[in-house]
Image 1 (tube, rainbow, N blue to C red):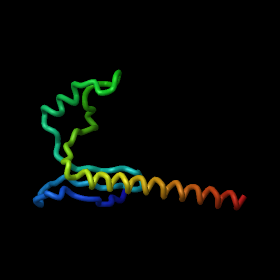
Image 2 (image 1 turned 135 degrees about the horizontal axis):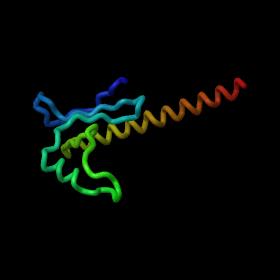
Image 3 (image 1 turned 90 degrees about the horizontal axis):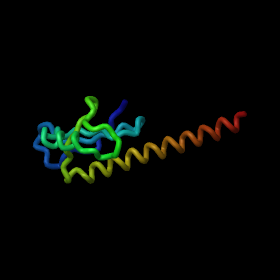
Image 4 (image 1 turned 120 degrees about the horizontal axis):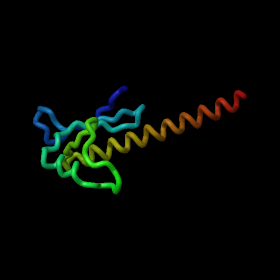
Amino acid sequence: MALGFVGIDPNTGGGGSPTVWVEDEAEEIIVQSWTADDALRERIAGTEWVPGHTLGIPAHESVIRIPERMVPILKEAIDRVERARLRRAVEECSADRSSFGDA
């Protein structure tokens, strides 16, 4: 799984900082950021955001905070994932056409 670096918090001071990567093959955005504090996690966990959906934050998920200044970085990550998806669709279409011609 190769990660492609997209960007880091422009206000970073060199320590652990919000960072965004893209994993093209899985078409996923990977984010490292500040862990939400207890009050925010409790607020999220105790609110029914989708009717009938289980309340709480599953043990395998996290709530993180992403600063507004990173919105352009997230947009770039989204664009990269969409380009990877489109590239894959074109490759699959080309492969299908090639195998059809060989039949």
